[in-house]
Image 1: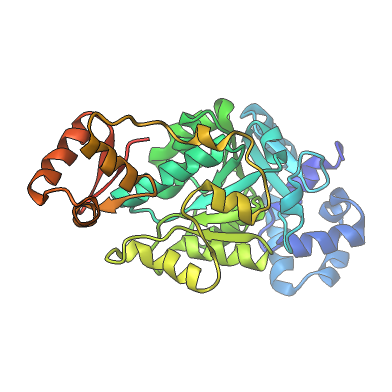
Image 2: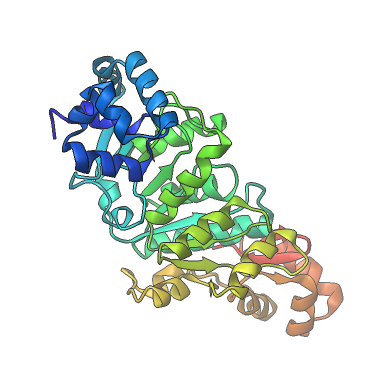
Length: 363
């Protein structure tokens, strides 16, 4: 493979030659170099007219040696589908990419306990809170977090993972040298510098165009045991990722949200379709039939009350965010004092305001 690797990479980047056609060509011609160097008369019989035209034009303009030198110069690793470092889970899907470009720790791709966390680009305070809690606990339970480096839930999942000492894989919709969105360039660098890997099937220099994202999404789900959607609208791209996960035989998880929020509609629809409703990390572990790698008690940060009234509120918030009206009803505390009590507990750092009158424990 060492001598064939430059041609393997070159062939994988030819427009019009997707994973399936790549596999067929390799089976027929035996090596990528043989395909690359095949005379046009023979190649024309193996390809459709449009793909043949794309291939021949690409081959004339593409310098294999200089491209591979560029990969080496930028400390980019290449994992082919024939390598031991290629993710086993990804290899199981119907159309695994023949080549993965990797910046960072390629061994991260071999982690067996992986889960994707995806969602809206426009997180609410509620979405931010549940994403933080669940990602934190998933990391503590031994998961590597996979996501797409997009704005919102994706990039926040990567950041929470890093903040909790975990490993994360960012899958791009363009080349690994073209970070999109650009404001996440520093995050991508941080991930590659010791917190996981930034990967793509797309050649260097390719921009993250809209048509690339469905292919990117299949890799996100393909790398993972399951896909968790924390917050998403009805038209969110994260629902496409969840749908691909279902097609790939992976588990789909969804977090219920406030009924008044449009960004709760995506997860609600997934739950209607059979996704596992997730309230905490144990719901994920149970569905995947996995044991936590830590004691459950370690997942909870103990929050001590300074009064009986505070303890009542802490107990109410242990199961998740609660609206102030529900706190007032369930606590049976005087309505006039609940607001001030909540404000005082927030100042003490015991609870968080999520906006729209909802509160959660500050774990």
